[in-house]
Image (cartoon, each protein chain N blue to C red):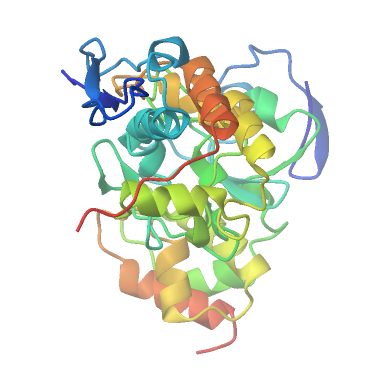
Length: 149
Length: 207
């Protein structure tokens, strides 16, 4: 299977049913994407597939064949994505485990809706859990990245 | 178990004799996961009554949670036995979720056995105008025949949809420990076809 990962063409010789998360972490060494629940219930493994957020833990690699996958490592070359900058400035993370997934979901939201309302943010981020409870800072950071705060 | 009794008007052409009393047609009792077949319902000689019986059988599929869960009257689907979807999701402008949280963010083109996440091609919610939750059989019937509320389908297209659509097919292959819709998709398609052929009669609201 041929997949463009963070802008680089890769050929993966793996079981097509392998979860994309396994391929990213174990085959390609991109460990920024985290394993949380393994059942698409927490959002920690969120990456982009042709710009759309997907849960890598339940997405078979075959679905990505011929497509572009973006992980947290590829969101920007130098951590300069507005969300990454806002995350740092507002010190959003506590333990940080869920934050890659949070940022990738937020990036998918902003790409489609550059100025989301609070309700838009809540709806788009509803599947990303943070057991540290950083939700208010996440929402503030998204609005900051959108230039609305 | 379900017992369906249907009136059959016996031929009563005898001069001054009063009309014959309808005799009930007793259909075999069903288990919850079964449907009466078209062949069984052909025991009902009156075309209109047969059409109503065919639709009654169809409603056992339509109102099953495997089908109605994704035909909500609001902006969020259900899961299992009409429980709120977990995680909380919303319909979005195209009934396929919102940016960052689309139906296909999690649902794949087939069931995922290890994670139990259900999937089928084109996983999405039925549009709001195709909501089924809270509708009576009479309301469902008129809705299914209305192109403005059935996805723009003719009755023939509705037959094809019920018989062969891959997302509809998921109702009988839901994966994990989910209870399938009763019968089979083939039976459901045949019931729909026979219902259309018998005039696509709709029940009336009970007072």
